[in-house]
Image 1: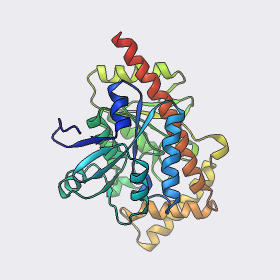
Image 2 (image 1 turned 135 degrees about the vertical axis):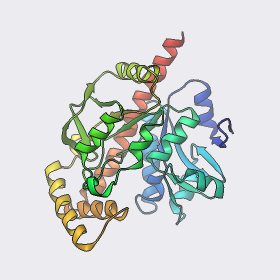
Image 3 (image 1 turned 180 degrees about the vertical axis):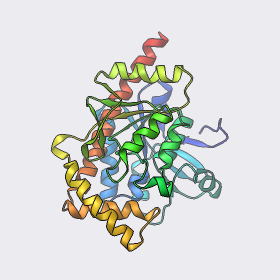
Length: 313
């Protein structure tokens, strides 16, 4: 256990040893377990994501909250318990102090996971998709806490872009305004979760994992205390056509306005509408992109770890 930050951080033996030896580690969110698929598919998916990190050459560290501590790494029994126990709350970065003080369990989101990853000394985090600026945010001010947290946490975030239900143009504008680097890994476009493109070009494309490692370290060496965003698109065979998804979303947005659906409820409403419009293909693509991002994060974390070792030699 470590509590140098004033917050107890508990590591599994595997993660502690990997960090001590300078091996590559990739942090993962536990919200996927508790608020994703129903049991037992949620547990199986969590294990597949961890296996994908291992396939990339790194050690997975799924993060959760329990007994007043941030737990870095979950055992198979932990995953099974979180997957089968109802009522575990979703914990974003704003909720962390309250849930830690209460001592109960909590599942971390993207925002809280990057907070925990930085505290734990893990420079890489993987997620299928990040939050962003919502459609109509000019009136609602609905901006995901993920974007705010990226301005505060020194973690490299690997993802498949942001969900198509968001305003992806404004999301990229926000990241630019906040000076958060966005690099597309072996792709020209900013992807949209289970769509290979959002219709927006990425600010930068880098194909060499070693160059990405150097860029991450350069970003932090320049005095920035923010995240470094790396996007990787879903595999072509698992992708869904972006035009098809956008048509479904536009119809669902109109229906949501008619039915008075707003706030936090709108995301689940729109995602269900997309799933229905694609005959469930979006749910399958969701699982595929979780694994593909995790595998890429593993490879990138290995390259970054090697770069740090070379720099220290």
